[in-house]
View 1 (tube, rainbow, N blue to C red):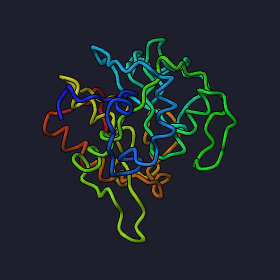
View 2 (cartoon, helix red, strand yellow):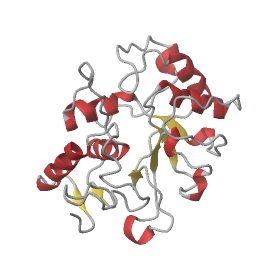
View 3 (cartoon, one colour):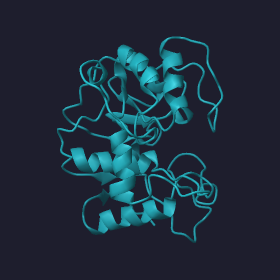
View 4 (cartoon, rainbow, N blue to C red):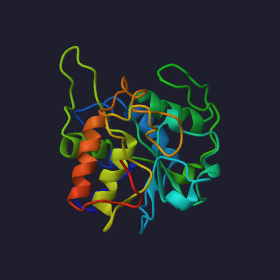
Length: 243
């Protein structure tokens, strides 16, 4: 993969050539083509910003002193979406959907076309009204989540029988994308407390702790090890003291 690798899915991938994918979401688009075509027909711009000042999936308003005030790419999924993206983002911030499941694309399609909302299939109710602007929406190619899992975290893409599937968090995904598109990667407000600090918040916002995330579909211990390795190698630089 190089910096010329397209980060976002494009409509022409489906019209001018057959977009082959052997995997379903979150690591491929097999079975999602119908919803994708509808979404991409409305979000018709696919340009990548010339400079990425900040890439994240978290709010900045009220935390500017620690995490800055500019967000170039905002990664999100329905359960993490806020009713009004303008509250925590700039007018030119690109809202990048990370589709983990078919319902995520269906939700965005229903929002864009003002269709009846189907609420099933989410671990947390997403907004039924979302004020994101179609021209600022992009859909991340699942290829990047796949590489984050297989290359960076080295976790299995297909769980064994009776084994719970494990997926990368959007935080570690953002780090992977930044490592492949940016000359320098600074990390602020993202990381995991040491194992003994199970009640310490994971993020600079919210109240989730390592203990509360124990049964999630993420391997936080593996992500913590990878972040430490990247820091030791000098690939990322933390702007603040962390555990």
